[in-house]
Amino acid sequence: MNQPQSVTRFIIQVDRPGQRLDMSTIRELLEGTGIELDGSYGPVLIDPKLGRGRSAHHVPPEARSKAEQIPGIRFFSDTRQQPLSR
Image (tube, rainbow, N blue to C red):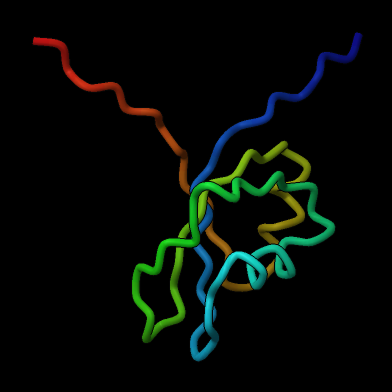
């Protein structure tokens, strides 16, 4: 019996030295991977000189495998944080 594969939310770091990073650039870069872009988050520039930015996305496992083949793409878990109650 096949169980559906889970979709996990990740922060995707994109390194593109010398390139301007915006959502359309990231959309083009990840086109065809199956990653669901979250337009409300990112990209956030981490280091403009290195062309480094991060954005959050919903990523099925097979889409992550495809995207990991793209040079300059790294994945980090996006753990939801809740404020501490007092």
